Structures are given as C-alpha cells and as structure tokens.
Image (tube, rainbow over all chains, first blue to last red; front, side):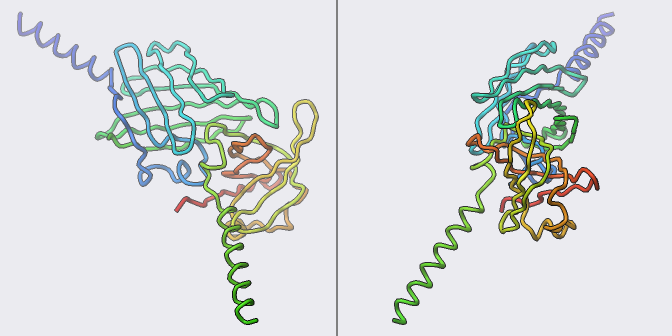
Length: 156
Length: 129
C-alpha cells in the first residue's frame, strides 16, 4: 500500500515537474544558432541580445535588453491574465503568458505614434528548453503581414 | 606646390572616408528596434548610392495626408544581385518592413521591401561585421 502511494506521488510529482518548465536565468543570444534575420543591421523581427528571467509558481518576470536599445520588461501572470509591459516612453504594450505543456507562450500588442499615424504590432513568442538552451520562436504581425523567426539563447 | 597638392589630396581623402563612415552607421545607433513598422506607398525617387540605397516613398496616412518617407535599404550591389534595377520601380507600389528612426523623422531602416505588382521581395541581407 505504502509503495503504491509512494509510486503515485512520485508519478504526480514527475508530471508536475514536466508540466512546469523553469525558464529562470540569464540568457544570451547565440547568433550562430539563430536565424540570420534576428541579428545584425537589418533584423526582420527584433530579438533582445539578453534576457533575464525570474520564475515563480505563479509569475514569470522577463527583462529584455539589447545594445543601444531601451529595455523592455514585464511580470506576467502564468494564468494568462493581461498585464502591462514596461516599455520605453511613447510605447504602450500589454501582454499575457501561459504555460502550454513544456512551452511558454507570450502574446503581446504594442502601439506607438509615428509620422504615419499610430502603429500597432502583435507578437507571439513560444519558448522552449532543449539541452540547456532556450529557443524562442517569434511571430510579428503588422498591417496584415506576418513573419516568424527563431532565436537560440545560451544560459550564462 | 607639390606639398600643397599632396596635403589637399590627403585632406579630401580623409573627408571622404569620414563621410563614408558616417553613412555606414550601425542599426542600433540610428534605429529603434522596439518600433517595427510596415508601410505601403509609392516609390517617388531612388538614391542609388553606397553603402545604402535609399528609397523615397509617398505614404498616405489615415487622415489622407501624404508623407514622404526615406527608406534605407541594402547597397545597390546587394539589390542588383537580387534582380533590382534603379529605373525599374520608380512609381511602383511597395510594402516596406522595417524599423523607425530614433529621432522621430519619417525615416525607416528596411529589413525587406516587396513590389506589390510583381510580388518580388528584396531582402536587406547586410550583416554587422
């Protein structure tokens, strides 16, 4: 009986561990393993050079930084509720995050003024861990046009 | 006299090199990676110079006002390798994907642009050294 309970608890713990991947850490972009269009002078989709992640059972905190660019940060609730993203002045952004099995999915909507009027852009990021590396697949949708790029990050 | 000529030649060379370096700025210094933008408009002029070709594109805003945007693209050699010719597309409708300038002017760095009629896409494939 005790063995059965122990096995059941063990299995449950294993399931929980599998369902709750931990993305915590400081991650740096690995240019060699990423799509060409995420780095250099002409990125198709902006990916940060470095990401700092702190994760708790209920929240995930994300700080994106890039060279000579303003940082963007957010504390997402893992229940998928909408939060305000801390973006540079002039940019308004909201987003939400949820765990989907072993993956984290973050969706966000950003808007800012421009000489062409107010600009809106949507992003969808899917995070996954593999062999110690963080892979982020990101889709940018704007004015009916969509494109997707992939970036790989190494843990520092 | 020969010394003056040599000095003038060197000076002009330095000035040209400085101008080239200023023109060949990095993306992160001039453009805002947090502000991606997609524009649709008509090409009215082409600047076919190195290190970056520049398209001048008239874009109509929601309020009907037309704004001429300066679009920094790849160099002429890169564009020509992809089949683009300077005289081919002035007056053509184009969709541009890129990033706004940090200074708020109607200037954009294009990661790609697509000619609407032919659906041909030109990618700015230049990479930071």
